[in-house]
Length: 153
Image 1: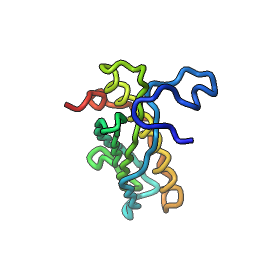
Image 2 (image 1 turned 45 degrees about the horizontal axis):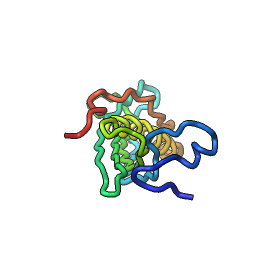
Image 3 (image 1 turned 135 degrees about the vertical axis):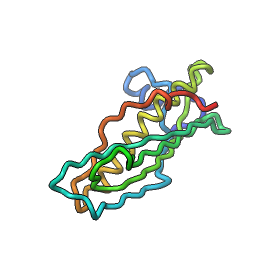
Image 4 (image 1 turned 90 degrees about the vertical axis):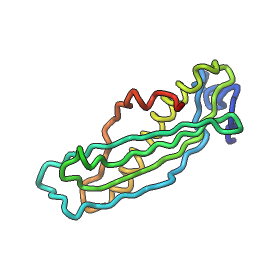
C-alpha cells in the first residue's frame, strides 16, 4: 500500500513496528540525471583524491508534500587524478506529519531529505561504477554543509 502524500497522520510501517513515526517520510524518489564517465587519463598507481560538490533545492508542492532535488558531482578543482567524472541528481517527494508544527517543517524537510537522498546517490554511484574500468566509487559519508540546511527564501 502506497502512503498518502502531503500531511499524514502516521506511517503504516511505523505503526506496525510500534515505533514513533518520523515526522517526514519519503514517498518516492527518482533520478533526473546520472552521468558517469571513466577518466581515460586516470593513473591507477597514483593517488586518487575525489572530492564532491553538493547542491540542493527544496520546495513545497501544491498537495502539501515537499520536493527535494539533490545534486552530487565531482568537484574538479578539489580532486586529483579522479577515476571517474560524475554528476547524479536525485529528486525526492516527502510527506510531512500533520502533528509537525508549521514553523519546523522547513527544517525537518531540509535535514531529512538531504540525508536520505545522499544515501540514495551514494548507492547509485557505487552501482554504476562497480562495472567500470577503475575501482568502484564509494562516496564518503558527507557532512551536510550548514548553508544547505537553511530554508530557501
